[in-house]
Image (cartoon, rainbow, N blue to C red):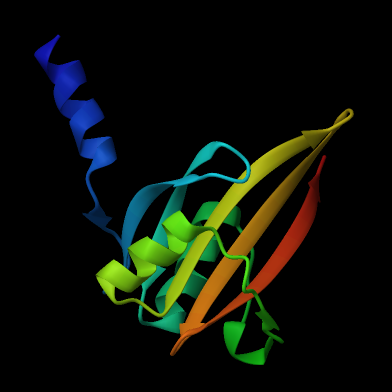
Length: 123
């Protein structure tokens, strides 16, 4: 029983996984989901996290960022508190009988927030 409690505690703590990045579970109020976010100041760490977690090779240097003033306050607060420029998460949604993987990357530049996202049909 103690081992189970210890493992559950480790899941809730942040863990360093890719270079200077770390992971946090963040509650997204708009969807009601508790999602695992990777946070970092290094764009390459976020690219590696996308590849590791979603299996997608994405070059974030070549994408077009969209202004995102509606970023969830919880994500915004964690990024501000941890003083990071990038965050990413991935999740799977079922729409009718189809599963869709979503990858979302947020970027902070000063007081402005930007987003880039991808959807992938899972067969």
